[in-house]
Figure 1 (cartoon, rainbow over the protein chains, first blue to last red):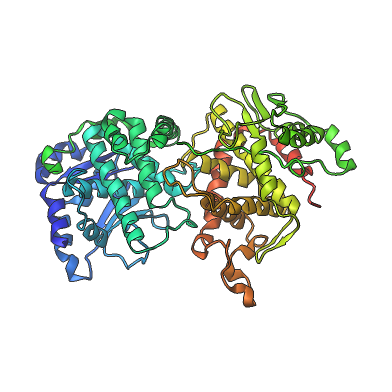
Figure 2 (cartoon, rainbow over the protein chains, first blue to last red):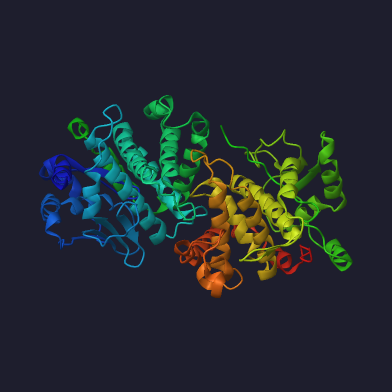
Length: 295
Length: 290
């Protein structure tokens, strides 16, 4: 399983994201991409791979480090004018005991952490072939969740006002950003993220675990509808099948144009002023997903 | 299907009722908001007639006009009390009026206790159970209108943001008003938690709204709302009870409140007349004697 995820990540491209800029990392063609990426360095974005204590994660650690995944991620974060250093960390995390993605932002240290454990969990995904390939949900799920964490980082570090719940806001910005890189990237990220929440929902229901209604975050099923709605509201053509197949109820779909417009406006007003738009355009103009990534 | 979003109105019997006669005199000197127009629509359903008459007699919308005096709107906003065709309506649609539905008021009346209920966390009086949810719902709808008219950037779900803003406002009129209205709001939301859960809806389910309101209250004033967290109670009462704020949530409520307050200061406060805000905060809007 762990081997699967490692190969899934290294064999093709790893998606990364920034709050506003995101992209896949072409691990296979990193050398050819160097000239363009050199322009994307930001001294306020640093990274570190923590060596895992568990030998189980050693191969994954070596592979990710060898491929320069965090280096790539740091470049994708470059267009943001971070007021302080933001740290990208890959590490083994203590068990949280809470069923949720072990990818998170820490406001104490301005860091975004991706835990090796969660990459292993992604490797367990087995989506129906009619929905997506494993590669799609792994890559898309990872990117979607990293985008969410990057969203938290941006909200905190840029002092973005959030009148609604923090986690909902982070889901919104993640979906919104995913839509800014063309339909292929958008579908991969949205499908993968949808599948992440659908999987957590499945496990909760299968084990009779109540949803955390008392928590500050929307619960798993709500999160999957929320991200789908932003996607459908922003690009009906690319996501019409989600409505046609009932994954997004029509009653909700009718309001999604408004929801997307709300997010788009909030982004333009509160985040875009802190983005180097020239760099953003460079990132947007790159080809991030190749057909083989989605097999 | 979009779930019915009834906007409430004042349990007129309670609501933004004016206090005793000294307060009535004081009311005469209150500023009003010229951009807010009010409209009492007579109900066709005779059963709502008493609500209509009491609202008008107590000048509830006029009071609301005064309460909203600090809000600097670039265009007119109509606040209307009306029948909403049963349960299905919306609180506010872009460019439309804020509609306070007779149906919603009737619901508040129906769910209010007949006499004070003693819960482990707090006493719920008849007055608070009627006033709290009415005021919260009105402020919720006005928040939605404010987002739209003032073009406020909103991150997070719109209705959740409106809930949070309305709670924030209620929490800034001193601990007595906060406790009175929040307890009542919590009672109403809790009473509605038996409704089927629709996770596909763009709004949170009632229980989530309940916990969010309580969390902001606890975050703003952990002393006044201490008993909503089991760990803060002693003896036999320390056992978790229905309606408690989960301890995991409670630990972060101060942060949640601060984020909300900061967002409010950044996005909405600049559109408020600060001198009038101060006057409104110093005034007495609710009769807390039940």
